[in-house]
Structures are given as structure tokens and as C-alpha cells.
Length: 306
Image 1 (cartoon, rainbow, N blue to C red):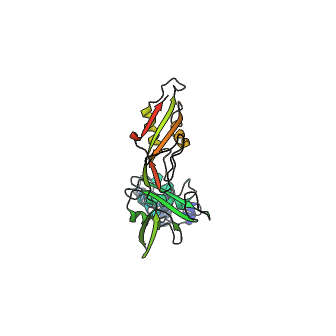
Image 2 (spheres, one colour):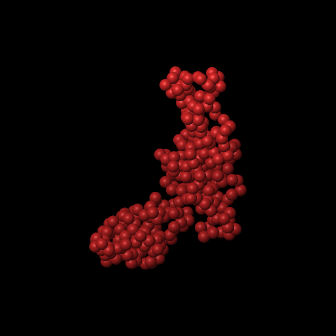
Image 3 (cartoon, rainbow, N blue to C red):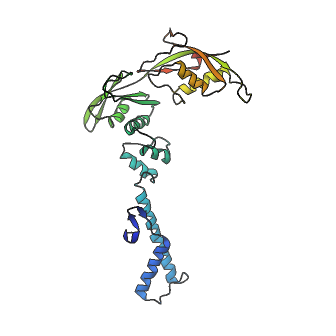
């Protein structure tokens, strides 16, 4: 019954499932061929009832065949079959990740750099990893981050060094230069290979902000200085809307955009920053090295409203 004859089954446009009515008609025609045109097979007759049972059983087989066919299509696969297809891309489902989100990752929906997205995803899925960012220097010259030509740097917070190295090794082929401050060794397919990864050094930064506040266009009062401080820290911290990456300086533009994009009735007038007991001039950026990452704590951020 399940074949590609008559336009059913696997066809150039996909899978065309045969429906119950078509199956029942074929069975009834077969009965006429066997027993003659006068055979009684109305729905109420014993033979008609048997025909219906067989047609229902065959319909279920067609539905199962369609499900098997669709399960090999990432856009239609679900559950365990989607996990199996992801293995072909060297990918694993994140904890609690839905089929919809996982499917988008497998098909690289909205992503132009498939390789970088895959590395990021593989490292991010490692237990304990809280931050991962992949940096690439595709040029033939040293870039502003001091990455050598044709090199790659994977910055990671959290996770085991060996697990991180093993995840990166699946995507970074031999010959690609890696950059970082920690050397890790991995064994992949019987071969040992060492590579560098970036383990950012967390640098506590102190900030003093002077802001001007006013009621908004609807007459609502401005946020308190505590709310401004907490909002700034939230946006610039891990997972925030404007989170700091390793090597990101803390400058006036970044601070102002974080505050003023959150509140239309708050204006950042000036700021001053400090790191490692070094106080920078008013308005000067707090310099963060590529192998470092700035962190902000509530007790280190002072907001003054004028």
C-alpha cells in the first residue's frame, strides 16, 4: 500500500500521504475484483465494517511513514529525532531548550557566521560556563586586540579547561592559530593538540556618575539614584542588554547609552572611573585589556543627581 506509485509516498515535492477515503476505495475495488460486482460492502454490512477496519489500519501506516519522512527534515523534526539530526552538526541541545529554539540554531537562522555560532554554542552548553565570545582576525595584520593574523580567540568564563578545549577542538582545524592566556591540551580522534584560550581576568571598576533628572513627558517622577545605579549595572553585566565583553573599555558613550536608553528623563552629565587604585581623569575611558573584563558592583558605583 505504501509506495510512490500513483503520486503517493515520496514524490519530488516531498511526501504525499494517501488518505482514508482513497485507501477505502482501493479496498472496495479489490473486493469487487475478487467477488464480483454484486458483493455487498455497504458501511453497515459485515464486509463493509471489515473494509473500514483495514482502511483505518493502513491509514495509520501512511501517517507513520509520513512522520518518519518528516523526522529527517530539521524544519519538521521534533524531540529525539531533532537531537539526532543536530549530531550531524556536532551540536547538542541546551538544558531546557525548546524544539523551536534548537531548530533555529541547527539551521543557523539569522546567522551569517555559521562556524563562530557553532563554537559559541558548543562552549556555552558546557556546565558552569557563564560567558563565551569568539574573536577572529581574518586579516593579514595584527588587529587592535593584538590577535595575530589569521587567528582565533575564544574567551570563556567558567567551565572546565579540558571540556572547553575539547569543544573548541571539534571546530578549529589544525593550522589555525589560537590566542589567549591559558594553554589547554585535548585528545581528539587519537591525537593530542594544545591550544590557547582566553580566561578573562575580572577587573573591578569604580564609577562616579553625575546625572540630571526630570519628570518625563507624562509627568511621572524620574528614577531614584539607586534605580539608575542598579539599571546601569544590570545592563552592563553578563546577560545585560549592553553587556561588557572582554577588552571593552568603560567610556562615556557606553555609560551614557546604557542609562539614557533605559530612561528618557535621565541625562548623564559626566563620569569618572577607577581601576586597580588608578583614577582616570573626568570623562576619560577606563582602559580594559583584551585579556581582561570589567565588572561592576553596587558598592562601587556612585550616582549623584543634580
